[in-house]
Image (tube, rainbow, N blue to C red; front, side, top):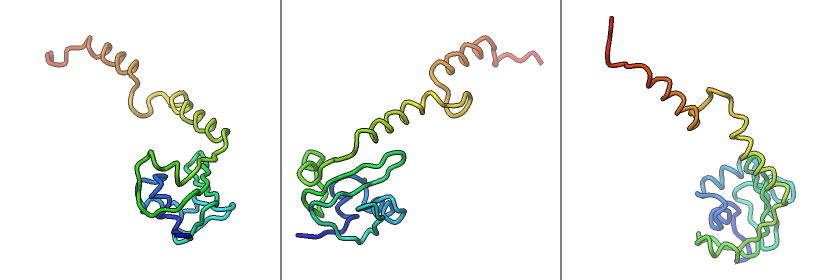
Length: 132
């Protein structure tokens, strides 16, 4: 096997959970080879470098071998090499941390502290008795 569809390979090496998700990413222009967006039907060869944009990070993978069968995570290293730049991982870490810091007060679910404060506040009222 010297060529295989890119969507099939991305699914087989576990970059995407489903082949449909891999195809959709290609159609949306999130999968690139040589800075050019590729279609799901594009054939790839060993040695090519594939860039996959999963906002906010762009991951880069070097194709070592081809396969169209999905495999266990322990075997993925035989088929691809992760060549993502370290600054992309820093960006990912910064984004993960900032998600907790930048949350607007009152937006989304309450934090543990906010929940405790709310329970302490409402615990002083007895909603079962009605004096009306």
